[in-house]
Image 1 (cartoon, rainbow, N blue to C red):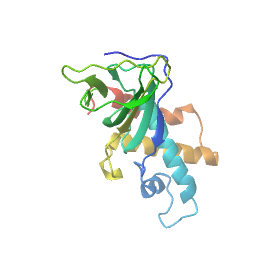
Image 2 (image 1 turned 45 degrees about the vertical axis):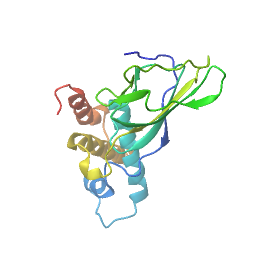
Image 3 (image 1 turned 90 degrees about the horizontal axis):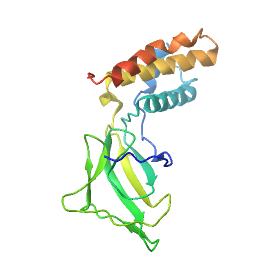
Image 4 (image 1 turned 90 degrees about the vertical axis):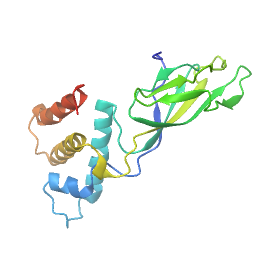
Length: 194
């Protein structure tokens, strides 16, 4: 399996429709009454920030979102994030520098590895010599509800929400305040989980 190097980082094109942590859960974490709406906007930002931090630290995405990655040529390769739910499209510039869409009968998604592979007796067409010769558009995550997100991920994100809430209020002490979050990330990244 090829690991493509020196390519631009993938970018999100359609963000998640909801967050894996609810506003009610965040309020409970920060010990704010559920009837108090004065901090809702700030808490919503902290929830988003916490999700993005978790995704960056683990490369794991739960709520469906669309990403795009540009590569210099067509080949079998592994996408850098997980879980990859589906490939939306694979477009490329042919040797005449015209944009084409590769038929899904040529390639498939290896779900277990989050990789693009050739189907039996298929081959990738030649591409134009350019840094963005091919573009993969794909969907990460398959959860459509915060209720189905794994507990360890929710717990870690809630710890971050609480940390950011206290930090914004000046009530935090030291870098050790994130130790519990770091332990959950380490536990999650172990091959024995779940």
